[in-house]
Length: 110
Image (cartoon, rainbow, N blue to C red; front, top):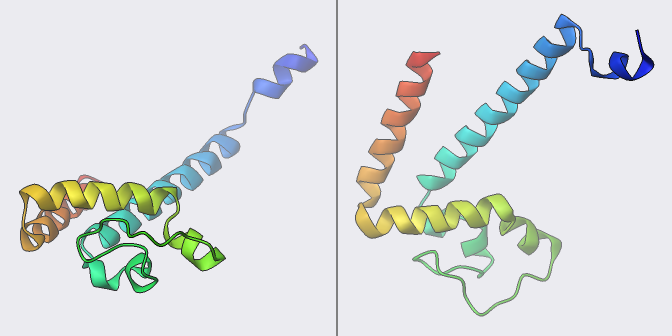
């Protein structure tokens, strides 16, 4: 067998291990997004640091410190935008209920 071909062949154990890591990472991201989607704006780290207002809109303050930059990382910025879109249509209570139903549906399916 060619040396180049050996690089692309994975054992069953490697495939299972990779699948478990991917599944664990996906689950962690889904739980984090669910938690942040249902958290009031005044509980967000970015709000406490003065980077977003009580409607999730960015303030004039720039993120300069490491803590401020971490509170507005790519995932949090995505969730802030998504939450703002949801809250234009839904109330906060309905949003929490929908996230709970969705998580329950995922758990039951597995």
